[in-house]
Image 1 (cartoon, one colour):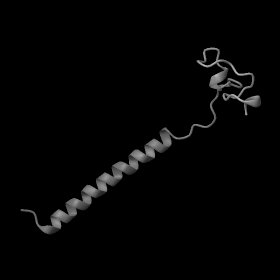
Image 2 (tube, rainbow, N blue to C red):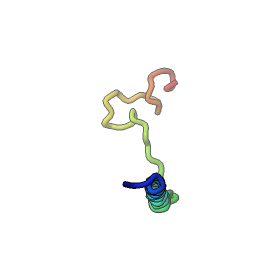
Image 3 (spheres, rainbow, N blue to C red):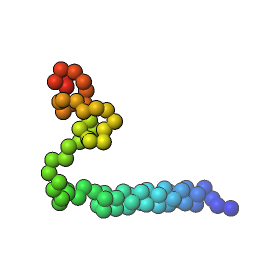
Image 4 (cartoon, rainbow, N blue to C red):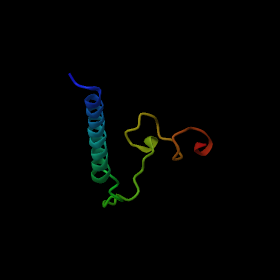
Length: 73
């Protein structure tokens, strides 16, 4: 049978191994997947208003907003 000291030592070793795995995995995720900076491609201005699409479900409104009203307000 194990004594109490061996059990405490094994518990601390287990905790140390788990925290080490977590720290190494976090460090790798931070360095490998981290922010790569600005992208290198340049698409210019991309229009992203759903109502301006020619394939929109709703009819086109006279102003660039996707709500109806006086001048899109």
